[in-house]
Amino acid sequence: MISLEFLLLGLAVLLLLSVVSSKASTQLGVPTLLLFLAIGMLAGADGPGGFDFDNPWLAQSLGTVALIFILFSGGLDTRWGEVRPVLWKGVLLSTVGVLLTAAIVGYAAYYVLGFSLLEALLLAAIISSTDAAAVFSILRSRQIRLKGELRPLLELESGSNDPMAIFLTIGIITLLTAPAASPTALLPFFAQQMALGAVCGLMVGRAMAISVNRIRLDYRGLYPVLTISLVLFTYGLAAVLGGNGFLAVYLAGLTMGNYSFIHKRSLMQDHDSLAWMMQIVMFLTLGLLVYPSQLIPVAGIGLFICFILIFVARPASVLLCLLPFRNMRMPERILISWVGLRGSVPIILATFPLTYGIENASMIFNIVFFVVLTSVLVQGSSIPFLARRLELEEPMDRSLEPSERLLGGIVQEPMVELEVMAESTAVGKQIADLNLPDDTWIAILRRKRRPIRPGGSTVLQAGDILSVQSSAPSLELLRSQVEKRYPEDRP
Image 1: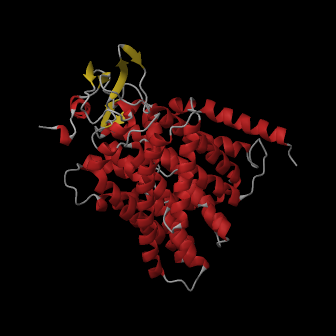
Image 2 (image 1 turned 60 degrees about the horizontal axis):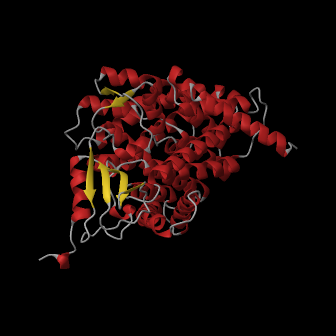
Image 3 (image 1 turned 180 degrees about the horizontal axis):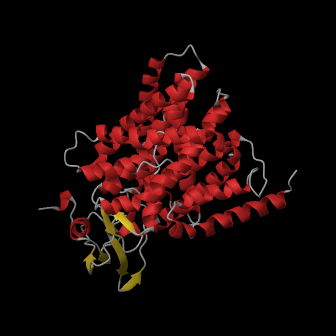
């Protein structure tokens, strides 16, 4: 039995290697997460590390917890103003698009692999969701930014299509393990999952912002603990009520991120760091779980599935889902079709057949792993080239961190001073209660000629002078709040 000291030492070495390897992604042009996966494989039984990790249940559990925080952080970083114009496109791609992709790949696998139809559809459902984190990792390392609505559309699709893939996977496993179950029974189950997940996410997300503003903890370090507990509560509540917990945490992050709350910038940094930690742990664990020697026998089948997925299923589903939207040009549709990288979720879902004892589960897991590796290497390495050829890229001067995006890039606007009027509605309110737009920053607050560094919990008083940096529309919104009278005070 390995002692705790050696286990901690090994874990520290793997984490250090993962962090250092992130620097290599810029030169290699591959997602950082793929390097994390490679480190896990090298540390596994078939690699130099020789660590034999054969616990699909533990890998699935760690992956589920990691995915909860990754989805919440993704929602927290998504700006509603950007995704609202592409909402229906994203919803169609993340629901109908996932269903079409699974159907096309499933029937192709059925005629080639010798699986039963349900087993083939299970394989297809597992690899039906996309991972834009891998895409943006490549674009960021190559200093490329996509034009127009492409980035928010891909961001919305990838953040919201995982619940659909998870539902399909669990639904098909249910049909495999309970032959008496009827496929039509999945329809009300789907409606229940999505409806309850959405309601829980939206309601708890708003409650999270209010709780952070109202609880007024004495120690700054407790706020991340508070939000972490609320994220786990959101997932657990939705799951217990029969909803989709993954959809709930993503929508909770999206809802909370579009309200003002205390320590917003630092909390976004905390959850961004936590998401990275979760991704490293998840990919290291999944890398340890796979045996590279078992990937070689499924290479031919994996290449066939990749071909169907990349060149048939994904383009067909994208073109059909975007058919009603005539404002999208064909180059944009082509790029969206190509940017359908498979990532962490398919590998996590591939552990489900192992834990449920599905026949051919090991083969399904190895095929999925091979497909993910091939998708990232083939599609990922060619995205920058295709974006340039289609003239859909813009130079990216620097990569903004999620916390820096709170200012919306409005750093060139001049500083403006506003006085909080005695009769305004802002008197007695916390700054967080004003629900300021993301491109508005109160740099300094002067009270009785003394400068104060404002925070979300700072309570405004009559006569306060606010030094504000903001875009013109947002500045007028703030001006109306600090100078607006109560209705009963108006003549």
